[in-house]
Image (cartoon, rainbow, N blue to C red; front, side, top):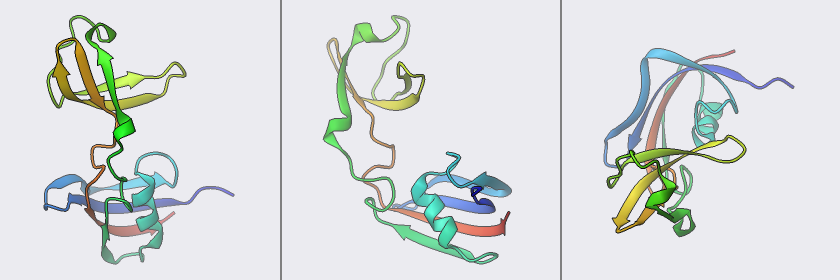
Length: 137
């Protein structure tokens, strides 16, 4: 069975009102499961009515999950390219041996130890997802 495709307009807002992401001027066309939207947002799109602007309020657990202590890893400075500037809150892309990419944020630098947070940037945050489904393709 082919995956469902949608054409939508959306805004993703942090619980504090800050705009996180939007696609409001130019509609986004995507297929469920293609990775353009996180699964929690895809579920909102699937639940939305066509041509109706709807707002979904998602708790941290419903959205991007809670902050997991196990997602923090301490790496050595030697694990990074020598010319790479490292500073707190820098976001760095890491590749696994299989070629998958993961982003991590530098949480702490203490001597030669670099603590990297691999949680989703919105982990632990409630969010508001405003969406208007223009078409189900």
